[in-house]
Structures are given as structure tokens and as C-alpha cells.
Image 1 (tube, helix red, strand yellow):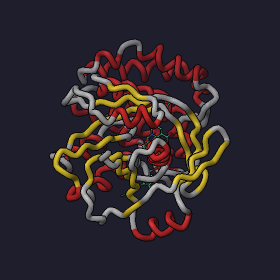
Image 2 (tube, rainbow, N blue to C red):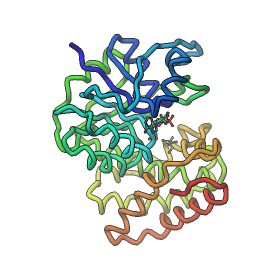
Image 3 (spheres, rainbow, N blue to C red):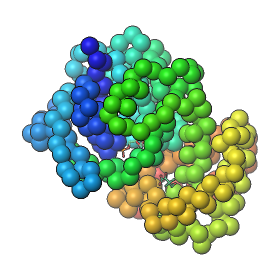
Image 4 (spheres, protein in one colour):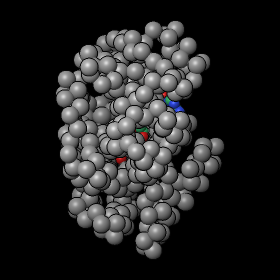
Length: 305
Ligand code: NAD
Ligand code: KPL
């Protein structure tokens, strides 16, 4: 019998994955926070995915964390700051040989999760797909993209990648997933905080070329010191390319701030600054950027961690 995908977190990415897997006939179950959320979900009748302007509802079954059934495969689709605690409450349900797929952006949350489920295999993911919620249990598929998956401690690809193929989720197994995550983190550190501080779209950073270049220099130093030279390669050119290619877009951090949501700062810029300190690397502009961002978040009444 096919293994069930348990999806922890029915937000944007969780819904995007759950609906496409369910549509392909793959068994999926959502894990919702509590009985109240489960009741609200059941009243809604399922998850709705809006794709190419067409809305379609999928009655994916759901449960609460205290359901006793064992979990073999868990897609962790919470924000980075929620992942450790959300997974910890399921630790006793994980079957021997269980696998977790971690969709969180940035770095730091993956290690925190792995520490609470030492017996399970943790697979990291880095995704350029884009989705947002436009109502309760309703998600718009906004940007087609790609997802890289990998396991830094075990290079062999799992057989369930076939489920992703059947579900039409574009993906590739990566033997250098940490390089990909570091590269994405560096891009996010060079772009996202500045879009918040300058209150602009990504393209607005073309007017702050020097500031971006100085940050890229420090991020390159950091990546090299962390043993990630491939992630450091031509970083500034890549950052400039992304700024140009996504000029009309607002960065994800800008959108979080604009929607008065908590950001993932601690797993992006905060993580970079913490690792630099651990390596006794002095990166004044990166540290100053973090301080400026914290002050801005606090002035807006948003969490700064
Ligand atoms: P989201 O806020 O839309 O969804 C997270 C969901 O997790 C929410 O529904 C929340 O209620 C739920 N959750 C939190 N704690 C829970 C718990 N203890 N039990 C059950 N549910 C719980 O977030 P998202 O946009 O889907 O982002 C998830 C991760 O994916 C983030 O790290 C984000 O950076 C990354 N990501 C998102 C996108 C995107 O387009 N949305 C793209 C790439 C990467
Ligand atoms: O990933 C991004 C984001 O907005 O989070 C990009 C577009 C690369 C900007 O950093």
C-alpha cells in the first residue's frame, strides 16, 4: 500500500503540496493545530487551490496532532520559527525509519528539527515555487518554480520522488542541498532586508547598487569561511541578476512586513550574523543591516526575532 504523506501546516506551501499530491491519487492527511481548526476545516469541506484563475476544492482528510496513528512520511510546511515545536509534538508518532521533508526557508530551523527527531531522516528542500493565501483554506498558486531536495548526510534519493513526479511537482534530487540553501540565504540577506528598509520593490535596489555590493562582499566572505565556496561564486552578479529579473516583485520579507506578519529574520540575516560571530568574522555592514531591520520591525510593532 502507498505510504501516506502527512502534511504539517495547511498554509500556502502545505496546501500547494497537499492538493497536487491528492489530485494525483497519492494518500495525504493534513495535521492541523487543534480540534477547533479541525472543526473549521471540516466545515469548509476541504482545501481550495486556485490555479490559472480556476478554483478547485480537494477534500483532503485532516487530523489533530494527538491522533495516535504512526507517521512514516511528514512534510513540514510551517514557518521556520514554528517548525521545531510543531514537529516536537509529533515525535512520539514517528515510525521507525520515518522521513521528514523540511520546506523552511533559510537555515537553522532544519538543525533544530533534526535535534528533536534524532531517529528520523531529515530531507531539506529549497523551493522557488510561490503561493499565497487569499482566504481560509484557500491558496493561490502564484509562481511556478522548482524544488530541490537533498539530504546532507545521505546522498541516495528516496523512492517517493515518484509521488512528486506523478503530482506534477517540478523537483530534482540535489547532492549539494546545503550549498543551495546557503546560496538562497545569501540572496535573501542581500535583497530582502533592504527592500523593507528602503520600502521598495526588488527593482528599487538598482538605486542602491553600492550598498548591495558591500553586502555581497561580506556575504561572500562568510560563505567562504563556512566552507561554502560554491555558494559564494559570483554572488554579486547573481544578486544583481535576481534584482533585475524580479524588479517588479516585492520580496517575501517585504510582503510579511506589509501584511503585519512575523518575518523569518532569525533564519536569514540573523542566522548569517550568528554564524559570522561564531567564526569570529567581523562583518560590520551585515551586522548594521540586522540592527537597522530590528529597529524597523520594532517601530512597526512586529516581532524582531
Ligand atoms: P504559511 O504561514 O502560509 O503556512 C504555515 C502554516 O503552518 C500555517 O497554516 C500555520 O497555522 C501552520 N502551523 C504553524 N504551527 C503549526 C502547528 N504546531 N501545527 C499545525 N500547523 C501549524 O507559510 P508558507 O508561506 O507556506 O511558508 C512555509 C515555509 O515555506 C516558510 O519557511 C517559507 O519561507 C517557505 N516558502 C514559502 C513560499 C511561498 O510561496 N509561500 C515559497 C518558498 C518557501
Ligand atoms: O527569494 C526571494 C524572496 O523574496 O524571498 C527573492 C525573490 C530571491 C528575493 O530575495
